[in-house]
Amino acid sequence: MALIVQKYGGSSLATIEKIKGVAEKVVADKRKGNRIVVVVSAMGKTTDNLINLACQIMPFPPEKELDILLSTGEMVSVALLCMAIENCGEAAEGFPGYFAGIRTDSFHTKARIQMIEPGRILKELEKESIIVIAGFQGLSPDSSITTLGRGGSDLTAIAIAAAVKADRCDIYTDVDGVFTTDPNIVQEARLIPEISYDEMLEMASTGAKVMLSRAVEFAKRYNVPFSVKSTFGKGEGTMVKELSLKEGADVSAVALDEKQAKMTIFRVPDRSGISSNIFTALGKENINVDVIVQNVSKDNFADISFTVNTTEAAKTLKITEAIGKDLGAENVVCDRDIAKISIIGIGMMNHPGVAGRMFHALANEGVNIEMISTSEIKISCVIKKSDGQKALKAVHKEFITNSQ
Ligand code: ADP
Ligand code: ASP
Ligand code: MG
Image 1 (cartoon, helix red, strand yellow):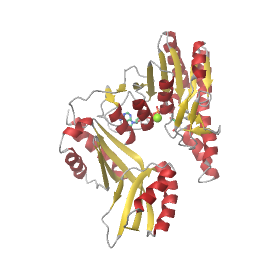
Image 2: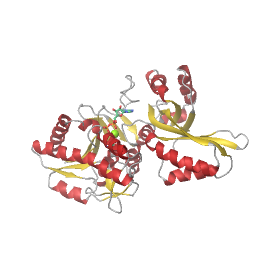
Image 3: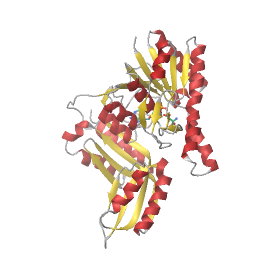
Image 4: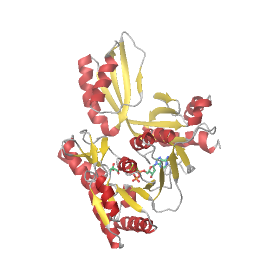
């Protein structure tokens, strides 16, 4: 008898018909003799709609109350899926994230999991019920509801799988698995049957939203192999696990992140400690900074640019403006009209000339590169948002369609 954790994303639960379909699938898996723990996201666009409601009250809603509001989305899915499972003749037990023992820190809207106490889940499993847990939420040390950040149900699923020592963790979504790029943008994208944690991590953190990067990081740290597959299709999907290095293609995937904003601080004094001031302040507010570029100093002043996720742009601008003023900078500008295109591949380490080929593919399409960042297995370029999709198609053609 296997213990299986299954996660269903918002698109898989968007309507009552879809919820009934998920219930039938869960019940069928249970009747094959398995013990099942299900983690659910909020239905369809519920989380966006809830954020929108809060922002109609004030542009920066208090984050503690925002978490109370956002946590309701996943609870609706828990209740409806439990009803649908019971309607199929099996017992179900629904849990908010906090009853499922998920303890977090106090960073509202972006809390980090500190500990999981799975005792209650394990007890309920003994009673043969199907357990349904609200993804994306936990409880802070002062007992208030927290949420884990957008896409956080992926993290709930992986963390629960680790805590209950599941035999399998399956992430069900609206595509057949992890592809060489977003199959909804590039038709030629190919399904990747298996991929290493490291490559999946780079893909997720460069915009392949099929998995949350923090969930992949957690899976790697606690060695939780997992699969990504289609809720309503039949295929085996993609297995994500530790893979031994093998020689192969230079680039295994291409990703586009259209949710990036670029901050530029103009004319800051070029002296030691300036970058430390800026990025320490952002770090204290738990803001994740991505690509950073400082230009060559002219008359002892420099411009510093960096990118952040658009969900953090307004907060970042506010903080950066205040620091810029203190440091005597000229002004701070936020550009939301950007995107980041990245190529990812473990094989890249041993294939010279990869960067040149990427820049050439972009230049051929007339795409201007504003910023570049690299790691051993990734190259990212910041470009204009309106160039994003044509850049993705051109780079995917260069490295995947034409190369294999
Ligand atoms: P869920 O609601 O199940 O959490 P998401 O919308 O968060 O699903 O993620 C699935 C989406 O990720 C797909 O519909 C697809 O458009 C997008 N995506 C982006 N890059 C990739 C990729 N490389 N492989 C598969 N899907 C991708
Ligand atoms: N409902 C949350 C979101 O939309 C969490 C999730 O779906 O994983 O971000
Ligand atoms: Mg998701």
